[in-house]
Amino acid sequence: MKIAVILRNDLRLHDHPALSQAQLDGEVLPIYVLEDNLGAAFKYWTHRNLQTLQTSIRELGGELYVSHSPLPETVRALREEMTIEAVYFNRSYHPDQRERDEDFAKQLFDEGLNVKTFEGTMLLPPWESVKENGEPYKVFTPFYKQFRTKSVPQVVPRFRDAVFMGVPSSLKCISADIQTLELVPEIKWTDGIDATWTPGEDAAIELVKKFIDEDIAAYKIKRDFPSLPGTSRISPYLAVGALSVRSVYHYALKMKPDVSEAFIRQLIWREFAYQMLVHYPSTARQPLNENFLKFPWLNNKEHFAKWCRGQTGIPLIDAGMRELWQTGYIHNRVRMNVASYLTKHLLVDFTKGMAWFWDTLIDSDIANNIFGWQWASGSGADAAPYFRIFNPYLQSAKFDSEAIYIRKWIPELNGLSNKDIIQPEQASEEALEKAGVVLGETYPYPVVTHKAGRARALLAYDEIKNKD
Image 1 (spheres, rainbow, N blue to C red):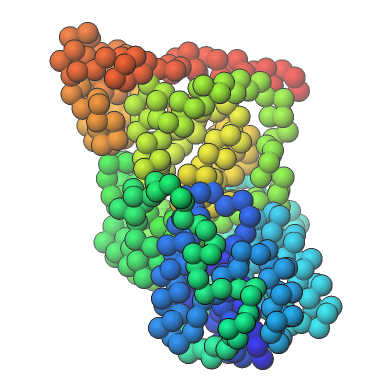
Image 2 (image 1 turned 135 degrees about the vertical axis):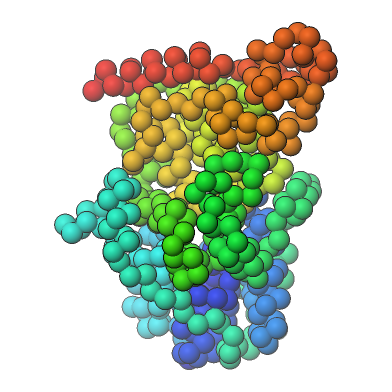
């Protein structure tokens, strides 16, 4: 049987259900299909991971092909130009893609094509993690407790001993040239990503093994400190599918069962985010809590632009946004702070921050991005309460007391003491002059201070409460 295996955000050979089954069932034709509306940073990260995957498949004697046509057009063209008998792919949980995939799979099946879909993104299919009455959980803790009673399937064998389909040179609908996808920006701004990240599943596996073997015991304590190597940093690999979440889950429980629970909890938090997206797909565009449809967002364009550029005058926030811009990544503790500052201090609609992250993160996972922003703004499931407004000054003092993180990303403030660098506008004129800092020139005054922003946010939240 001649099988086209459609790849998207699952760029790996290990624990790849669609590829693994295809190698058992017949001749394999691996094809990456470019979906619409990917962020710029994620496109480039995808390009780098496609390169490594193509090398791996060539070493097996095959070829990775790419298509910039949508999934239906790609498959129909393959049927016209080649005698494809089956299409296999791992399920996508992007709301638009999921509905399209289901409809198209049914059409192909009705036309006599063998279509098989597999779970390659989540630990368990979403319908296996609901309440007894079939309703989804909206609170994480009971979801987590229920999930830990379930058995996660073991990983499937690595794709390696396949028979690959021959492709005629006249074939026009797909190409072996990844450059045809045009995922690399014309203006090169990717040096920071290249310097920070090594693409591909081999790098991903090496990274996760090192973390679990050496660092997972301290994860619960160190993960909140942005200057420490306390997190796994595997999210970019999970987002592009260079790493299987099931393989991470099982490896952690096998190698470090006594100290891995805090980390396992975060993998299940990711699962919860996907669960919410599947059952509430409208959250991709609007708040889960309908009260927030009436929220009095200010949406000041200048304030939003300063947040994007890391010029808010709040050092922790600016450090995070500059890390994001340069590396395509932002530490999770800081990620929560920048989201809180945008939505609560600046009163900018969470969907604007969500779109900025989508465009600039290399780990821009659809479910995590939506769920995280709704959580931070207070509009989603199990969300941070409206009165929980991160104080960026206290967060800095607690999690970056020596200002190592701030100094790395905001070098213009390096001359200030650990105390003054957290809140430069409170430093003495003498301290600022000695450090060469001129507020409003070399570093901005705060767009909104914590005290003023918090008071304004509470008034806004009271407004939607009083409208109930």
